[in-house]
Image 1 (cartoon, rainbow, N blue to C red):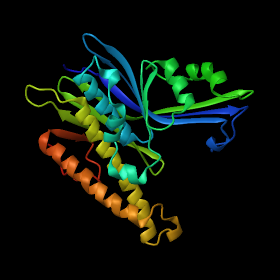
Image 2: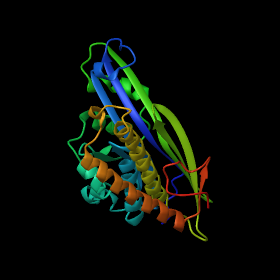
Image 3: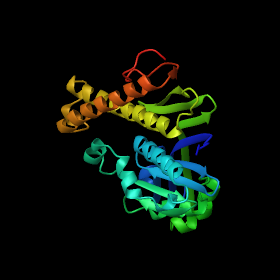
Image 4: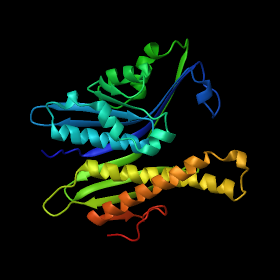
Length: 286
């Protein structure tokens, strides 16, 4: 069974509720309620079943990986989709690095508004939002409508930001993926196209796993820059953002990701626009 997804987007979402007028630029510390998560919503359908699925998560790479595994699970068994061993699937989406150094990582999965799984005690606010949205977009109109159920603020003010971080499009010649990163507080973007093999269609999930590897490498690259600034004396040692053990684990994880990226490029025709990011272990374009 082929899954025709069309366009799939991962959004960084942040919703802040305030009691009365919200203050200056650093808003979050003053919020009555803060809801933060990465969110992917996708409609999956077969001849017998149609499901509106939402995957939420703490960080972008793991959220992408879990969403890719969810796509594969539906493709393998649409009828038994809701009865998956979601805990095992979520555990598969985490790397050893995540388990050891990102204990705050979490996932939740919803199907037409029904919560199928949450890896940590889930947010009541997120559960309410997904119950009402039923797989649709989270809009300011919906957030305002739900304000009385989400917060006891006497005079509710709302700030909602939803920014695309990864946009993927499945079409007849392959899968295109745009990655919008945050570098030193600014947006930077690149895109890549993975061509369909001869007489086949590449699974979107495979490209999602690739995008997750790229995004994680970018995160490690940014963290390594901060560490290097300390080691070179540009910042005091007290500013070291991580332990030396984590520095070693980060290097190991980066080597793992580099191997995965090289293997993907050896197996598929990949083109970048405007060019591969500097941190990728690839040269030129296929």
